[in-house]
Amino acid sequence: MPLGLGRRKKAAPLVENEEAAGGRGGTPGGDGGAGGSTGPPGLPPPPAALRPRLVFHTQLAHGSPTGRIEGFSNVRELYGKIAEAFRIPPGEVMFCTLNTHKVDMEKLLGGQIGLEDFIFAHTKGQRKEVEVLKSEEALGLTITDNGAGYAFIKRIKEGSVIDRVPLIGVGDMIEAINGRSLVGARHYDVARALKELPRGRTFALQLTEPRKAFDMISQRTAGGRGGGTALGSGRGTLRLRAHGPATVEEQPSAFEERAIAKVDDLLESYMGIRDTELAATMVELGRDARDPDALAQALDSQLGDFAFPDEFVFDVWGAIGDAKAGRC
Image (cartoon, rainbow, N blue to C red; front, side, top):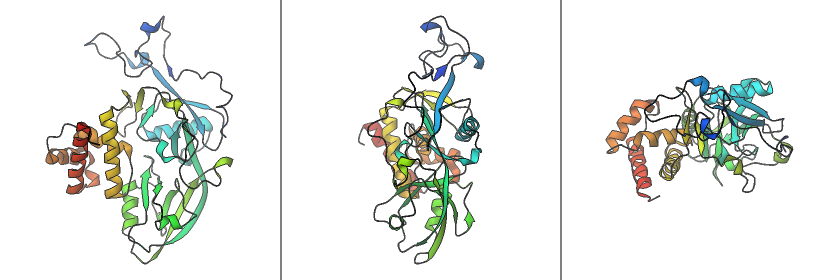
């Protein structure tokens, strides 16, 4: 059990101000930084020095004291702040989960962090090499990445080729395939490399599993604490971006949540990856698209590296339309 949670009587505020305020109405940023008004309509936002300072609590998932981090705009900077807080190399951080120390892929930190979320950092554990016979075309793996150079296993399909290899588990980082390093590769590159492996041949996977706490030693697949996600109940979220500063936004609307979930499912179906931040970006680009061609142009302009097939783009446009109409 990670240290610190049981003994903490009253956590320090997660949103702090750079200068003292005389009352509720005098705090810049309104409602604790959750997207409230910062002044009369038409006025520019306050200077950076007067904006709310976002502070998050964090622990190492296998057990550690509680640290406090702030001042990051993207996932790579977040990992750097975590490494600095616990005096470990940044490359030791594999991924983070929100409000649970378990390797629970449903709680994986993506592009958004709730302002009340507690961050658990999963670090590198045991390295292993596994030989796998590709007896079927589909291996049964879903790949994601941490946004900082590591791709790892997010889901294993029950009864699949990989499911029959007990040494491979959810959360394992894929370091190399047949000796070819994949450190720095995106999830779609890793998924493509696995798909292109010839059927009927054996291949070698070099993996690193996340370091486990004592109550996780026998755990193979994702699992969370029973119903315990109340820590992340705040309405505001910090949106991390690959380019540009992080922004404080309202939590996604019901339409956005439905659309993002559906597009994420399509990413898994077509490409073998899951990436809620990518799905959110696609929904953002496609919410006002008049037709599939307009969506394709928007995706090409922002996400051209993915080279999405036409049938995928058509399904994404349909999924966004269904979400708008409440059909999914």
